[in-house]
Length: 202
Image (cartoon, rainbow, N blue to C red; front, side, top):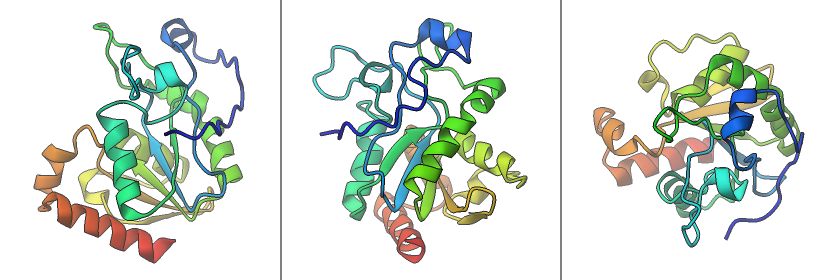
């Protein structure tokens, strides 16, 4: 189901001691290294180690492999006809006080950014699809682009000159059903809008 084409950049990375203490595996990017589309999420989820397939990046070592978000976003790109490369802004599971995900800290995003930059350089995609506020803000901050409201940026391509790619922000799959309605789309309309933007960029 998931091609084992991990881009192991620093196999025993220990830049973030707090993440080292709670991660099970580093979740590197997976997919074709000549993909036209790279999908960047926030960080691996807590996952379910006993799940038959969708265990999550903290257990599989592969981005976007949880039952909810992974299945949803991977299914979207299959539906659109793209064999995408999937990765995260932060490669290790950030555990919150209750054992589930917390938001990555600014220093964790910064520590991991050169891993992401290396992946972008190696894959050289036509478009980097950022899913959610944190992944989008990370690229925008690097490019010195003000984001203001995240929802205003969804489905609006942005040229990232320093990275040499076009970014296309999308809603994070975990929150798509809530925020998509605020953007005025039902699901078929949202999928069609993504497909239209990608076809113009790839």
